[in-house]
Structure formats: C-alpha cells, structure tokens
Length: 238
Image (cartoon, rainbow, N blue to C red; front, top):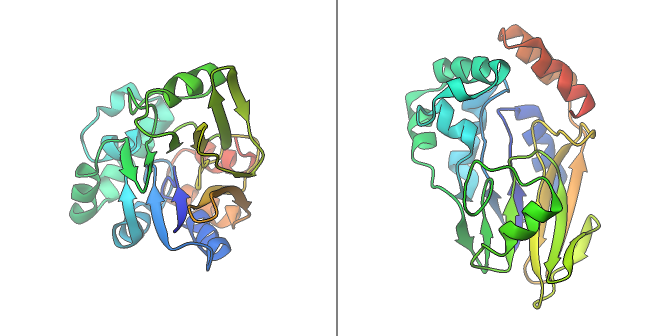
C-alpha cells in the first residue's frame, strides 16, 4: 500500500492542488495529520476535499479552534484573527466535520498518525530529545506527525536520535518519527509545499517538496482581509 501523508494544509488550496498533481499515480490512499484550516483563504474547499478523500485523519489545534472546541484566545493575535474569520466562513457541514475529527494517535496498517505528541496532541515536537521521547510513547515503531511545519525524519534508538535523508528504508528493528511537513504553510525556510509518501510494500518513505502558485494564495489572503503577514510569510517559508 502506498500512502500519501499530508499535514497542516491550513486552507491553502493552491498548495494542496500542487501536492496532488505532484503525487499523482504514486499513492493509493490519503492520510492526514491535521490542521486542515486556519491561516489560509480556502477553508471550505480544503475541508470538502478532505471529507471526500482522506481515509484516516486526526484533528489539529486549528481544527479544534475553528470548530469551537478550543478557545482561540490562547492563540497569538494573527492566529486568533484567522480563526475568527474561518469560523465565519465555514459551512455548517464542514464545521461539524472538524468538530467530529478524532484525536491522535490513530493506528493505520502497522503505524500511527498524530498531530503533535502521543501524550499531548497540541505539543510541538521540535528538538531531537522531544522526538526521541515521543517515539517511545507510541504503541507502534513508526509514527507520522505534524504541527511544527518542519519537515524531517528521525530514527530513534537507544544511543540517540538520527536525522534521516529525504528517502530512506524502514527497518523492522528500529523506531521512527516522521514529520511530513506543512502543505500550506512551511516554516523551515523552504516555501514549497511539503508532504510524504510511504510505500509499505517497499518499506520506503519519501519526503517531498513541490512549488505552487504562492502569489495566487497571497492575493486570496489579502482579498479576504486576513492579516498581511499570512501572505508575506508564504514567500519565504517562515
């Protein structure tokens, strides 16, 4: 089975469309590590697509906030403004879909998907020691996560945590934590949309990037009256 693994689309339709075009023919089904909405200008279009095409999905913190399950007052002013705008834009069907999304981790075909950490879905796993600790809290030896918008793959063993190249083979005796990166708002100084492909037959994971029409998304953000910084940051991947 070949899985297309997405995370942190953040209502960026142009980025999602570019990922789907780039991955066409290379996957059998779609998994999603959460944060479908927030920040971006196309929440309904993105959620409509996810409702129809995602096999397994877990919720992100922005999904919860936009569905009314998390108080946006905990967010910074930009995130709070985008959340309030998204709440007004969402159709009732899509709001209910976000409200009903499951909490991670969720098991899929011998591995797990989650948004943040196995112990706290809203926790950011940034440093290698955090990733190593989290890997040992999963029930399975392989986990895909998101939330940080930082693409990367890590092998976890008793001697420490090792960062892996973009393409690597899964070994049965090791543990892995893999961040597919953000489709719609990368923050690792690479503005291209990020995603992952996991081929369980070949035991190979590939971290991929693809360019998309950033200017079109920026124009949509500005026309919607969302904060200008949300448009500007897309150009730099920050």
